Image 1 (cartoon, rainbow, N blue to C red):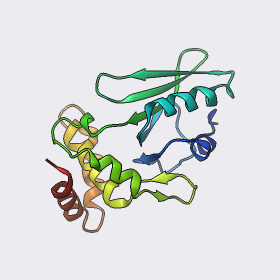
Image 2: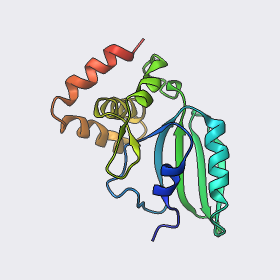
Image 3: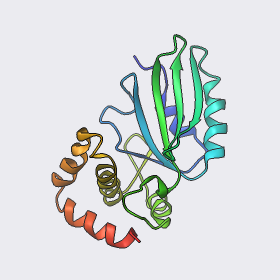
Image 4: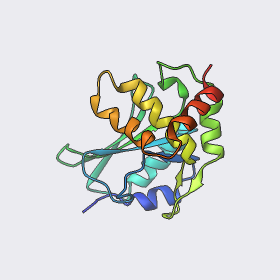
Length: 171
């Protein structure tokens, strides 16, 4: 059973966001996993998350800036074990292997779609591009990231869409 009501967290949040690589079981989640999010305002994310945390006496919410450029809200059980990580990215500069136009994240947020759960996700062409960027960025250290390339290959015209998007957003 999940301790955190992720649906409520995202439905009520005051910040602009998309959930990338959304799990098939969302809004449920497996303990000790993460939810990956693109957003545009760290201050609002932290303020809202800390207010939201007050609903949970049995969890500790810990905001952490990572050297990689990612910003985490690590949510721990009282015994110190990780319950869930909200992994936020606010800037395309987290991707080091391909130089990207900063307008990419602006466009992802501008053209977001509403899912059947009532939360925001990227339009599929942006989802495919983000998966490709994750693959390129991490495959040398994380062979399991091949899953992103496989996802693209299994999507009709996935490779073509990614190449077009790279042409639009790479510098």
